Image 1: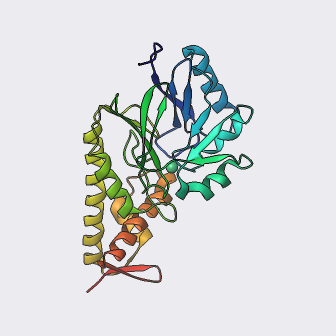
Image 2: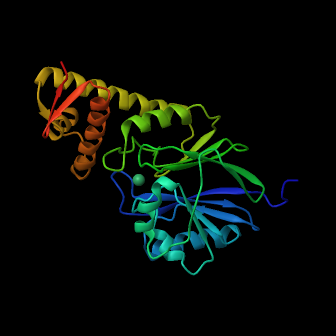
Image 3: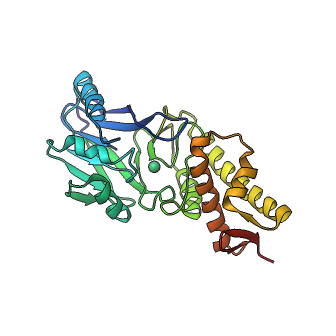
Length: 277
Ligand SMILES: [Zn+2]
């Protein structure tokens, strides 16, 4: 029987010094007055705690007994330290264990969730999706009854997420997007920005952007024969991106190059790339 207290899924944009154009990281509270979990814990500062506590107070949700971390990045995981006085279990994917341990130290009690595993929060079923790409242990949560996907940084509301070495893997990421596209979705709760109300359009947009970029890299290497990742990035963006994200754009170019090397399409010699044959 369904609980008489309706389950809520609440997006809480917590201010973080994250990547342009975003200025907040989304934490999510899922539950009712009897049971609640927190997904992601934002940046390690008091503001995070205050924002989340204010929502709990205003909505009457229970104090969370667990925090599920989508990944280890500094704008998603270290906020756990702000909640050390709550009796909590911290969950993540095993492939993210070391990075999470570093991100939330001295907190140590980590448990693991696996792809396909399901569990209930206040009677609402949640399914764990391991969706590597942005990081190796990226965890997404799917709520079948609401057709909601909490996508971590696999999907952001504005533009595309950055995928770069050493954490990111472009081949994995493209495969993950294709898997997410198979879910029945009414909306996506992204890692940054507002609810995404056109989920398939957004996934297609990101997939197409990545495939277009790959094509562009191949054609630039054809025209210029030898280029570094920085030169490629300069030619791709032609000064159209915010300087603060040029570095991560270069990392994304590198991630594409790594994929193309794996596929035997590109060769690397020192820091210079060329097409094979
Ligand atoms: Zn991230």
